[in-house]
Image 1: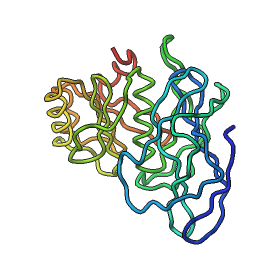
Image 2: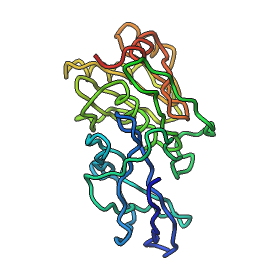
Image 3: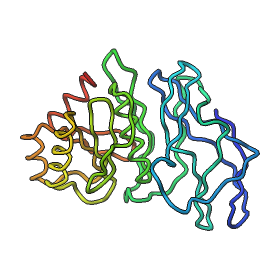
Image 4: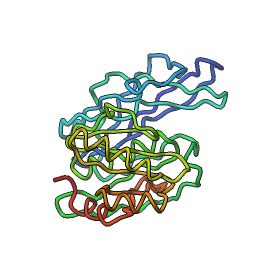
Length: 252
């Protein structure tokens, strides 16, 4: 287990006990950022993508990936950014240990999270998929990134172009859009993703929490866009045949 630290809210001075969330590395070992017990937490007053992520190195295999920077919400309403000891180190834990649940409210997901998510069985070349429970829009992006890594995509990062709706993430040879809203993705959403991917000469995939409008699903079939729905366990569910194929074969 990762070590707990005491975090004081900079607004109301209330103290909280915080333990960093662990995420599954591609090698299967859960990894968590090393927290700094001596530094003070800071209030999050504005959001910038580059500030949302931190490089964490798996001590089991040496691989470094980007994961959400540790944050904690105080009952007074302040969101705190928890200080980390170093941006390039992590704590590898036992490979068969499930990552702990995120400390967050239901946020934009808008539905009650399921309990006890089952692990998805993977082909022999891949380990069982370990989902990240979705309770906030931020969790939805993390869940999609974890899934893409499980499929075999590398160099996952912020997309160069911001999509009209949702959040864009990119990997080598792939552009993905994550829509964490409660509105089904529209035909225009799917077409915009496809057009952007075409200009960059990469494949694309869409993740949505609320599903897709019927014309969006039909258009995705003709354009060759895999569609997934993110359930609240953090497991992407294929919506069309293209998504089924991607789930089965992984990155090529």
